[in-house]
Length: 144
View 1 (spheres, one colour):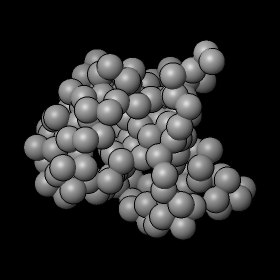
View 2 (cartoon, one colour):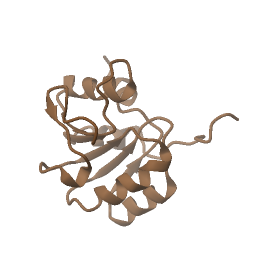
View 3 (cartoon, helix red, strand yellow):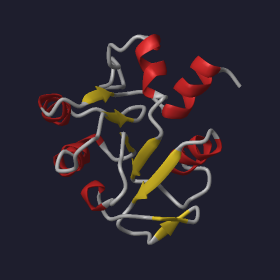
C-alpha cells in the first residue's frame, strides 16, 4: 500500500471522451523541462490540436506560448484546468480558478487528488477528474 491514490474519479469512458471535445486547456505547473510529464503531456495536447495555455509564475513563456502566473489572470476563455502540482497545492489552484467564469472541468493529473479542491469545484458546478493522465487517457480512448 504505497500509494494514497487508490481511486480515480467515477467518470465513464463516454464522459471522458466528451471532455476531450473541450479545446481550451490551462496547464497549471506546465514545465519547460523536456522529459517531465508537465512538459510532454501539454506538448502532446498541442499536437492533438488543443489550445494549451501555460500557467507557471516562474516562466514568461513556454513552448512559444505566453505563460500566466495563475488561472484567473488568463484573459482567454478556459474550458479545462489541467493541474500538475502536488496534491497539497491543488486547493489554492482551484480557489483561484473558480474566480474565472466558464471553466467546465478541473483535471488533476495522475497521482494528484485534493478532496477540498474537488468539493469547492463541484460546488461551483465544475466537474472534477482526478488521478488520470490527459495523455494516457487520450491515447487509450482515441488510439494512436
